[in-house]
Length: 293
Image: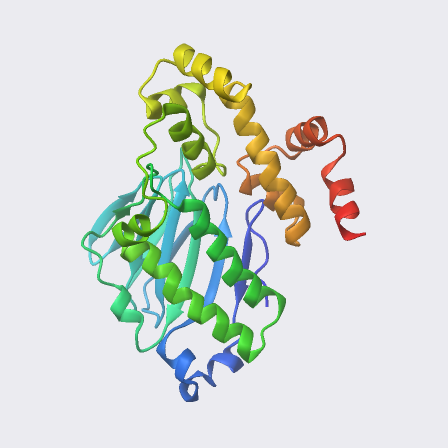
């Protein structure tokens, strides 16, 4: 059962209570299971206040923009590239920044092991991109969980999503271990490091200055060395990465076009369509149709 859209590009899914009522006899679901999950891009005016406690733990992962939450009389700011977990059983409130509304991945979860993942050293934990970050892989894992629940709410699809949830939570709770196992090279080459940074931030809008700041170079010098290596300016390369990701989402998912726009960091669907057509020689809808043939 899907929740009605409230933000452009929003997606969410709720596991029906009838299915959840049967979880007590299932060894996998009784340990950890998802009750609802979703993705809210640029969630302007997003706000939720719960004076009556609920039995869900709530993970909110902010990948762009800013937000906040309040719990037990304390207020916390939530910047880009950070996450927090709200424990079950406590009143709370949270919302998007008025000037720079957040883009969030969120999951409600329960189970006998749920509290085991609420062991964060800080109330708000940072997940900044670096040379060994694996943000794209984490976001792909979220999409796999979402697809498992969204396409079919069978017992096995719910068990599969719940099993993946252990992995997803671990990528955040045990961040150094997650980042240290794969892709451990230091990426000393400044162009390689810049490309990795662009890949990890494909859902965002970046300026040349922001890319240069990450690389520790002036915009003009970065542009020169980047173009010499790749044949393209940094922002042109970034746009091609966005279109490549859009192609994958068009063929491998049933996401609506406005959701895909946000997933590649382009909020204007008309600009997205023009850019896609320029790069691919056809419109996004035509590309999707050809992929279905």
